[in-house]
Image (cartoon, rainbow over all chains, first blue to last red; front, side, top):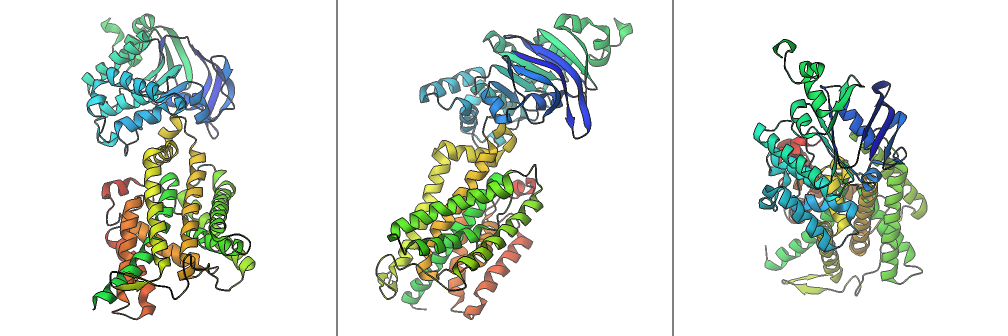
Length: 241
Length: 296
């Protein structure tokens, strides 16, 4: 689905990403974990076209995304749920979802309504809040709305940037349950997380990013039991094992 | 004050007020999509009047006005494409200085094309001395044209933003530009559209007001100051607040004539602008918390 080869990108003269390669197969959840400043968000900015890669290539379903504008990349089927939610605060929940479906605006009214109902089934709280302004929702509800809005585009690849940030543990659990349900529904997900334990539990495979390089990759089980990962990201001392 | 005089002042106030409101809405539309104040807004109004007057030599009145509005919309789009679009993440201050430059440029160009003379379109119905009785006062039918056309524009705009996809997309840009991009909306196109829209409403207002207020190459500056006062007074970004503030300013101005000399009329709006900037910078109807979050 998504294939990144030897990608280099950064801001101005600062090279944040150094020859990164990774891939996401259709129907799988892949997680990218790493500490603050490892380059996770920069990688997403490069995939979504918000910044230009200086070297390497990004292929979505075999097509190069190089020359496309950010909005064009969304039309190709690559949707991002950004860090910090970024909902349309001054519009209500339903309007947010309708705008999410903008790339599908040639679909009929009925398909649009079906799409909205699907999101309401996935996140029942959004149905209750459908006439409420998005800015008045709680953090967890805004996260759900941001995910719902991205799903309205019926993306081939859904990317989530730190969905657990700033949320209560119970809500985080709920969000991750929904991510597993998305896989069951056949979605492909790239999950960027600091919360390595929760991310690796739902993911099929994972990559570990450190100072702009991928230092480890493997199946989630392998990474969960890897000593380096445990020490650095799971908060477990090696001796205790 | 007699009832007749009262309604005379009131109607004059509403007429000017609604014109101020349209200029204020023009400010708001562009402010919402870009976060900047377009100080060339008054020039769009002037261009609408001037171009329609020139076209009226060859075309019947409705066609001349329609063509003028379309031309000014194209000029609005051109201004955005030439001066704003290609800038890579410009600062707010830089964009504001650019719009001031554009307004001087348009004004000087108009001086060369049309000269210093005062021009006007003919009255749409009747002539200078035709009057209709309204609430005991006698007003020119053109006053009713101004109020009617501007009201239709305000209603049309609110329907546009509420019910059409383009309107929703512009609202999305106003609400959160990053999120709009992530929904696949081209924010640059929305900015061009917002320039076209505010140029268009400004131009139409410029046409209908031309018979009573006359058009000269430099009327834009005064209107821009009034429109800016109205936009700030109502609270930047809200169109309905601009309408309320516009009517308020227009009515205050027209009633002031009965108390202070006419020459003080402009001083009143400027004092009001200063007072509001000192005391309630988020406007009469604006939300303080929302205003604190804004860059400008």
